[in-house]
Image 1: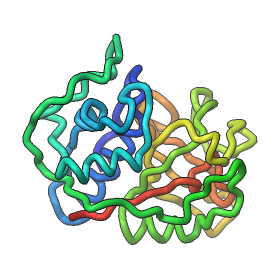
Image 2: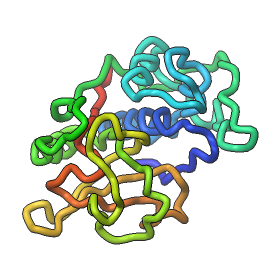
Image 3: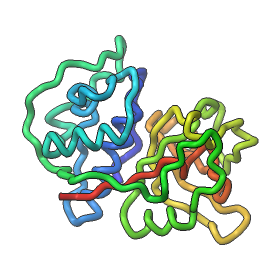
Length: 219
């Protein structure tokens, strides 16, 4: 994986989640670990709203239509600094990250409560594929400072209508015990949480980590 990033004041979590998942898939497939451009997705994906939010599914659809992604070096991220604008789409060279689409790691739940997501299957897919794009209820994540978070400690929901932030599930630990947890990479910088990560309790779909989990299909 690439290092923890920082989306800044732009509501571009959906673009970062998609971008980072493509980066991971690209590297797992044997290509050099390449920093791809979330700015390209923020500025060029016309089906989403840039700094005003978007969906990872339509972000992946955009990358398919664009034929891949430019590098961060060629198309650097600028939307994270004030005044947090989405920017105008630029014509830059595609350097990789070519995908044919995406697949839900486990069935997408669109209910107000999603208590029956198969987290064991999700863990197996993560192991077999690559880190996953996930969307969560992060409405109270600003209070997280470390440790294994539960729905009750964070006050978060697992329902589809509560999902308000997209990140990346990168691993898990001790899932065969009562203190298992998901390792989730955020993009709020390394001074947040566990050096930029949050640990979500396994087995209860904490904050909706398994409600909308996605891996990508490389071209």
